[in-house]
Length: 296
Image 1 (cartoon, rainbow, N blue to C red):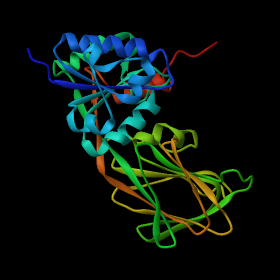
Image 2: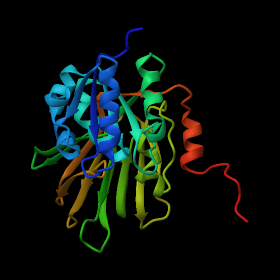
Image 3: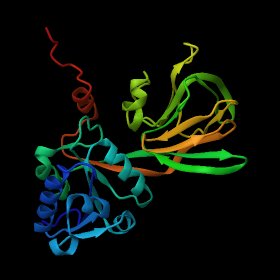
Image 4: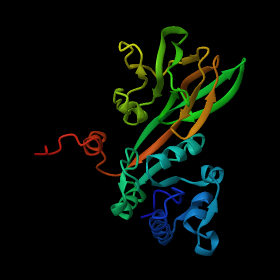
């Protein structure tokens, strides 16, 4: 039986030497199945994969986006987030092999990597769409910064020790003026990440909503709120406060007082492939230790 995917890209965490063993083993397995293997060039440099000499093609993200039918991400959620943003415009399906700690988005355990990937190659998987956030920072009427986020957009007070003040609007209507340490705007995917630690709601991936979660607000009545994913959120940094904006905790922009930040659902989405038996609620039970045996 022919494989469901004929060209597979492998992307790994650069700073993790233990990724090399898993990645090269998976690459060899795929080659034995007659599958063309693309290895992202930064990953190849980190793990010592030498491209054509081993029968693999070392290539940048742009070529992966144009040629790959599946991208396998070896690492943790951070590696998945980075790859998802880089490949979002190409609509390449992603699957994660968990080499990190929690692994909310990396479904396949390292120990069962070959079995899990084999199931996918045989067509045994489910698809799930996850939307991204598109953020524009407007300064003086012009776009000063643009970024995509799969998890969240997080505003912080940066290096200052005092709170920042922000005006929050949804679809042009004022929600409130927030004095706080910061603010998180989260997708359902990101609702189990930074937003969860700030007492934000867990949103099932099928919920078409965006969570707005204050960080340590001055007024305890400022609570998290979930809005439609069709809405546009506008955050204005009120003078004299500057701030810092993080995108999936990876990209960063230093914002100034007077900047207007517009956050909306991106036209791009990410397709995650899940192995047989995947359950979102089972994942939550495992990662969040729900229903675990009480300690005495």
